[in-house]
Image (cartoon, rainbow, N blue to C red; front, side):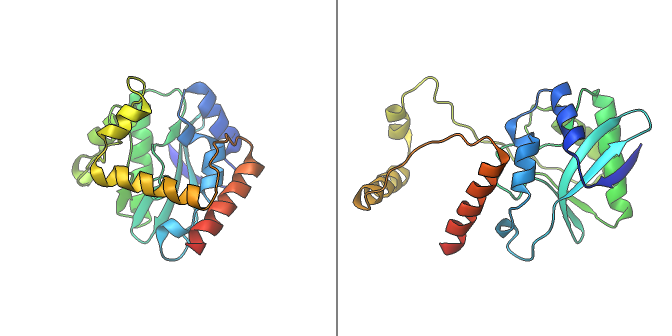
Length: 209
């Protein structure tokens, strides 16, 4: 196996997505849109790099990350993604282990000694492989995802279960919206151009704050 840096990963990415069911946080559209997030790293912008682990027969693993000094941040870790993971197709656990180890060895050769990846699902194949392949490389700590299941309760019962300060914050926000005569709506944005415009507007609002 070898690690190569690539510029256009769309075709490979989409093929892997077709081979194995993956979540929206691993979609190519979100990767491309999210790669424009700059403010979350606080200091100078660190570009997203794309690496492919492959051999002469097939492509195994896509890694989107930011490398800053001795640290490599798996894409999504600093971008507020709910779920963070590598992108790979229908490969075995052993193939995944060899692919991740190959990428770690590549980082080591580049004097990158730390790999940060928060919010990898604890029940995923990736997490099982990371636990087994880290070994003597260093310590590993899982940051658990937090989710709220509203299927079995109404919003009112969920709201009542919140703490006093959380309920007050929500009431205050709703009151300010009403006072300012603002309306709140939910819209699903699917195409890349709309996502890009939405991201630009969110960035403008964030910076203005």
